[in-house]
Image (cartoon, rainbow, N blue to C red; front, side, top):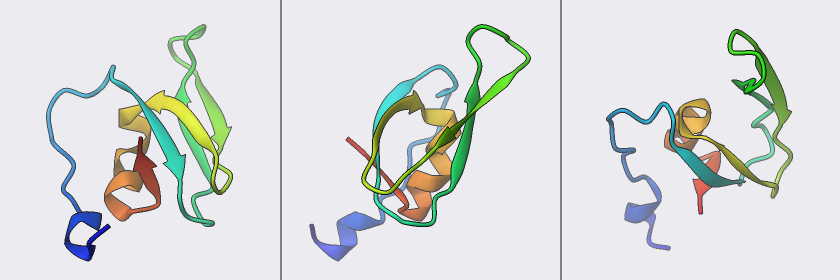
Amino acid sequence: MPAALKKMPVPRGDHDDVMVYAKVTSDDVGNVAIPDWQDLNGEVILEMEPESCHLIPFESVHQLVEDGNIQLM
């Protein structure tokens, strides 16, 4: 992929409920908090291992996508 396309801006808008497929591309992502669908006031911590793929709410990973640590599929 050309270097100019690796840093694409993430579109802004109402993405609170959008689920995306994401692949972890960095070793230092750590854990991500996602909403707990059974307890509306709770969160679940998801371990983001390198090269793993997840179906995850966009709002939980949007900063990681902008930083280039996660790639949308």
